[in-house]
Length: 312
Ligand SMILES: [Zn+2]
Image 1 (cartoon, rainbow, N blue to C red):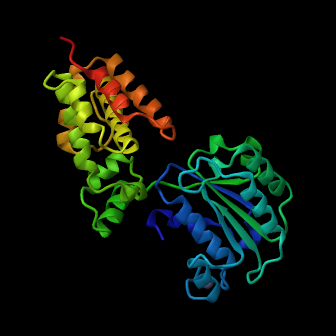
Image 2 (cartoon, helix red, strand yellow; image 1 turned 60 degrees about the vertical axis):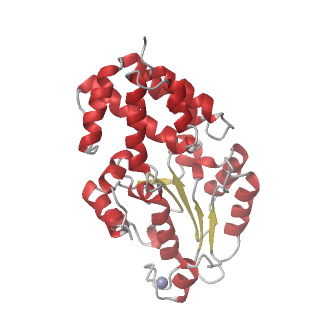
Image 3 (spheres, protein in one colour; image 1 turned 45 degrees about the vertical axis):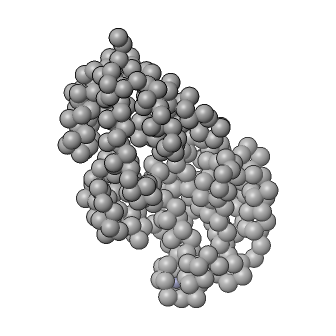
C-alpha cells in the first residue's frame, strides 16, 4: 500500500455502492495501477477488504483469480486491439466463478484503439450485473468522451516530497531528491528509472554548456549522446529545457533541483536566448513523441545540439 493513497482508499465506498466503472487518473508513476489492482482484489476478497489472507486474496495476488481479468498494452505495441476488448465483454458477461462479482482492470486505457473503445462502450452502456470495470489512464483526454462520461473519475494524488523521498530511501535508491525533481515527484517512475539518471542529467547539462560556450561542437556532443537510450536522453533534455525556460522567464527553477544543477542551469540559461531554449524544448518534445518511429539517434541529437551551438 502506498501511503499517499491512504485517504483515497479509505474514502472508497463499499462494493454495493461503488459505481460499475471507475477511471483512475493522474500523472504517470504515482501508483495508479497499483491502486486499481488492490481495489480489484478488494472486490473479490472474501472479507471485502483486500485482507491478504483469504483464498481469494492469495489467488488474486498471484494473478490467478478466475474473476479478475487484466488488460494492458503488450510490450512494444502502441494499442490495445479490439479482440482484447471483445474478450473483456465476454468475460464480464459470464457468471463469477468464486467471487460475488467479476472485475476487469484496463491498465493502459488511453491506448485502446478506436474499435476497442467502441466495443468497451457497449459494456459501459449496459454493464452486466455484478461486474466492475477499472480503467487506469495517464491521459484521460485521449479516451472517447463517451467512455469518460460513463466512468466515475478518481484522481489519485502525487506523493509529497517527504513521502516520495521516504519511498525511494526505503528501497535503497540513492539520489532520491534529484530523481524526484526530474520526475516531478512521481516516486514509482523515479524508482523505475536507471540508477545513473541523476549522473546522466549532470553530464547532459555539461554537454549543453560545452556546446553553448563553444568548447565542443554539436557533432562532438552528438558522438557522446547517440549511444544513450533516446527516450531516456530526450526525457532528461525536456526537463532541462523546462528548467532553462523557468530560469530565463522567472529567474527560478520552480522546483527542487539539486543545488549544483540550479547553479549550472542559471549559467546555461544566461548563454542562450529565449528562442533557443523554446526551440530546444519543442524539438525535444516532438522527437520524443515520435519515439515509436525508428529515429536516427545521431540525427536527432545533432539537430538538438545545433540549436544551442555557440555562434562564432
Ligand atoms: Zn481477502
